[in-house]
Each structure stands twice: as C-alpha cells, then as structure tokens.
Image (cartoon, rainbow over all chains, first blue to last red):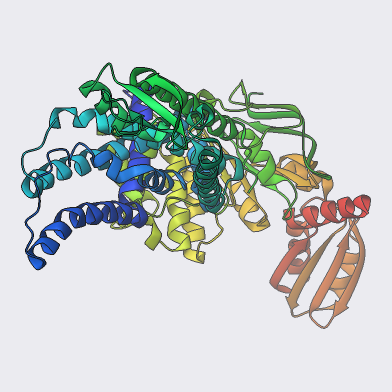
Length: 307
Length: 314
C-alpha cells in the first residue's frame, strides 16, 4: 500500500461517493429500469395509438397544440407515486435487509451524509427520468400533434412533477427507515395513496371540494378556472392539491390573474386565486417533504444494527 | 502502556439478555489481540459498540484515544472493520466497491488507482475486481471484506471472525496477511471462536463469556497463570523399568501410568518440563518417538474458564 495520506478530505468528495454508490444501485436495478421503460412505452402508445386508430377509421389525427404541455398531467398522481416507490422503497430499508448497512455505516461518513447522498441520488434519477420523458413528449407530440404551445414552460412541469414525486419519496423513505422493510415501505405507502385517493373521492362527493382536501397528498380539491361570464364549472379544470403543482405552474404562467371556483354539487363554495392555490400547494408539499424526510433521517441516525 | 482500545464497565442488553456485562477490555497498541469466546459470548456486540453500530447502555469505550459513541466519522477514519459474514451490494463490482469506500475515506482518485488493484492482489482477488459481487463466492466476499478493511491503511483493524467462509488455504493466507499487517505497526483486534487461530496469530488475548471478561493479557501469561494440572504423553521405543523409575523420582511428577511403550505423566508444575524428561529417557537408553504436553495451552485454559463461567451462570 502506498503511504501517501489522503489528498482530498472534504465532505463534498465523500458525499459524492455516497451519491455514486446510490446512483449505481438505481441504474442497475431492474425494477427502476422496468418502470422507466413502462412510462416511455405508455408515452409512445399515446402517440402511436391515435395515428393507428386514425388510419383504421380513416380519420386524421387532429392537431393538439397543448398535448405536450399537458404531459405532466398524463403522468399523473399514479405515475408520481409509482416512480417514488421504485426509486425509494429499497433506498434505506434495503440496506438493512441485505446487511450492507454495516460496512456502509462504519465508513468515515456521517449517517446524515449517507442519508443526504441517497436523497440526492434519488433526486438525480427522477430529474433524469423526467427530463428524458418530457423531451420525448416534446419531440413525439410535435411530430404527431403538430406545432406545440408553451414548450418553454416544460421545465416548470418538470419542477412541479419533481416536487409532487418527492412528497411520496419522503413518505416511502420514512416508512422504510422506521420499518427497515422494503415491502412494508411499498405496501404502507400504497395504503396511504389508496386510502387518500378513495377517501378524497368519497369526501369530495359528500361534502364538495372543501379546503381540507388541499392539505393531504394527492390531487386535492377540484375547481374550475373562471372564464368571463360562463357557468362556474365551464372553465378548464384545476386540481388544487400537491399532486398538480407542475400543471398549475404552467396555468399560472399563462394566466397569472386567474381565479378558480370550487363547487359543492353545482353550487359555488368559494373562489381562490390560482397564485394562492399554487403557493399553498408548494408550501404544503415542502412541509410534507421536510417532515417525512426528517423522520427518515432521524430513524437512520438513531438506528442500532445488531444483526 | 498505550491502548488502542479501552472499555470501562461497558454494558449492553437486548431485552432481558445482557450481551455485554460491565466489560473492561484493554487492547495494547501494536498488538494482535485475540477476542475469544463461544458463540453468543458478546464479542460481536462489543465490536459493534466500538465501531458505532450499537449504543452501549452504560460504560465507556475509547478507540485510539477518542470516545466511541454514536455517529462519529472522525473516529472511524483510522479504523478498518471487517464485519462477521460481511455483505456488500451485489450490483457493484469489487473494484467499484473499494473505489467508493476509498472515496468515503477521502482517498484521492490517483491513490485509489494505485491502491485498489494492489489490495485486490493482496487478498487474492486479482482478475475478479471487475466482476459483480453478486457472482462472488462466500470466500471471495470475505476476501473483499478484508480488502475494504485495509483500504485506508488503518491504525486499528477490527476483524470479526475473519476466517469464516474461507477454505483451509484461504485461512492460512488470511492468517499470514494479518500477521504481516500487524508487523507494520498496526493494532489488530481479532474476534474468533477458533482457538487455534488465536493461538497462531495473537500476542494478547481476552476470553469472554456471557459478556463478561474471564481473562485478559499476553497469551503466555494467561495460559501460564490460569492453566490447571498439566500432563505429558510420551511414546518411547526400547522402554525399560529404569526409565519409569527415574521419571517417578522427578520432584515435579505427581503420578505416572505405563501402558506398553506409552507413558502418561501427571505433573505438579505449569512449567515446560519436556527437556528434562527427554534428557532423562535418553540417558536411560530410551528413544522418544512422540511427546506432547497437555493442560497449559490456550485450549485447556479456554475450556476451563468457559465451563466455570457456565456453572456460575447456572
């Protein structure tokens, strides 16, 4: 062995080692690749299917200049949730299950650095996946549906999708760190997602699109953008929850002064500005990410490894 | 004397089971210290407290002069650790694992480029560095475990059962490797339940059972002070009555039984008296073809201490 003392000792260098460790895990795991392939297959299908059906029934595909800008909505709450599950379910709990946690945590990097490295690697993987996805949608959408509007706003959709996904990532990480079981992390998060999806549906049917729906993970209350003198439910639909940040960012940039009607049955309940909806959903998402990430970090920091 | 590891009243329980009970362990610097005990004696628990994987309920543990408590990366900088039956991410190659761990130690890329291939060669994994760990055998994973423990040229090496999973040739290679490492001014704490391994490699030993230290110190001192009755088994060609009589007259001989050309001599001393006995037999015309002294070796001391400890526990 050379007796040369380590030249670079800074924490960023060590942090990047954890990021590399985690990135290689993401890249080489079949389920991550599988889901990415699935998302791209569905996107391809969304382009190909109208063309195929159009040629069968002799109906040309209509131009849709907003197809690409709605790509975030195409992924939707289920897409964000599934991507969060596959990228985060094994991240910490998998280390406990496989026993690889012992050599990892006995290296001279703090558990905080290990946690942040894993979180950052998950962020990078999601960023790469979404970037490729939106790029693919932009190219494919332009070919199939003709020239597209507001392509310059795609980075906002990407940003919003990342925030929405990270809410679920932090929930999955927290359950995984506490339970030290990937299966519990996945099933627990799925239970939360399913419970919220069903609960919100039942709740909004019974009580209307009331404010509390905007404070739980998911689409939130459903409203309609005000459009001049039409009926209160005649405008474009706006989901006010933390699962629609990307979509709402685009709507806000296109209509900064827009207002949204929320109804119970067909009776107006209340009206909110889109800027308020957007600000609130971003703040609520950040609070969720912070709280659940803190729980995940604390569980890892305090974990004792007896096995 | 300077200690690389020092624990004072270290205690750790898992529910009602006391895994480590008021343990005082002192590992002198530049020694190879065997940490010996039967399965479940508390060896791995003590080691996990030392490397920060577990928190002690009470007591103190010091590693290289610093308190070993909780998540302290600075303490771990100078420590190499091989867990018992180490597990590494299967999707990485051996080389990638060492490079990533090396980076966590703050080793530069140029240092890693030169040191990683050398380490792989040292532990007998030349040519397998670019294979995924998922394809490694148990023995290869153990070798990789030793490599990652040596990666940062550590001052203190903590090895938890380093021979598990290795074939006999591998065991000998690992023993030689550990001896050569210690020869370069490092301290090695070696946990094992293999008496032969500890006796072969270690300069010092601590014997534990039920989390309690039963004996500790240089191996020679421990075996000398704690051994019970010793005996000599001798096989002599050209056996004569005069040989038997002469041996009986020796002051340190308590009794003797003879069966054809085999002598079983019970001794009243813990000293090595093989030279005196062999001179006496040769002088009386006998030819020694086999001689072995029992009772003052590490195995006897270990068995004696552990059985006493088991009786006490009952």
